[in-house]
Image 1 (cartoon, rainbow, N blue to C red):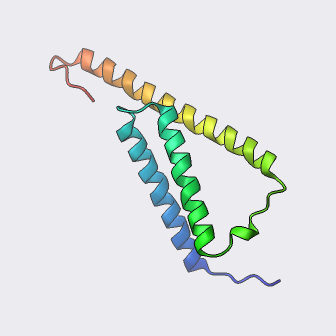
Image 2: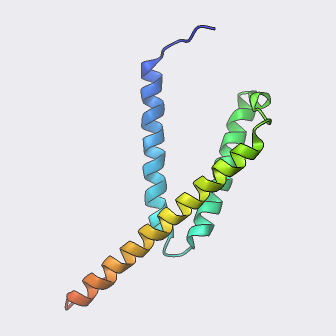
Image 3: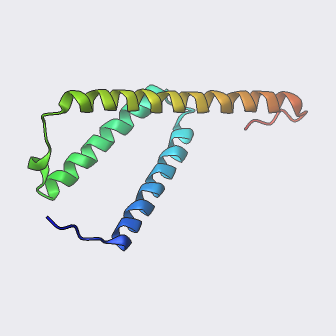
Length: 112
């Protein structure tokens, strides 16, 4: 089986992934004032699953998904979910600490 190299297509995929990761970070910070990190990550995982299943189904490649490694995929996703959850939680707490320190120093009491 020969491989076809498509550097322009690969670059476009990479730009798309960078854009989506950046949008997720901005959106995560925006909604962290209203929702808990667990809610944010659970909704993110649900939306991601729907998108992946929808794209695989639309391209008629859903049958190519292998089911013999579901246990490994489950644990990988569990660790990823935990890591992302902790990242959001810690970034939220560090932002809160910076804001509380800076507002106590400024006479205006401005918030971040």
